[in-house]
Length: 69
Image 1 (tube, rainbow, N blue to C red):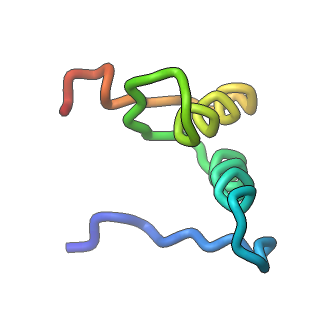
Image 2 (cartoon, rainbow, N blue to C red):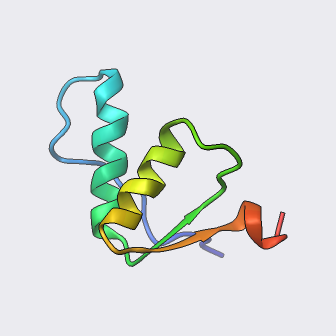
């Protein structure tokens, strides 16, 4: 059974760096319809990516707040 649709690799990233993760997260946020996350603090890359997705008008499902963990 396949548990995911696909693995995302950005075509725009050519050199590894810390900024790569931010760019990748932002690209995923732009491409998604619903962002599913597990955020427990107001800091870090996942938090920033979720905030970016919110600004883009994406629906956010934080499973840390849903009691599903």
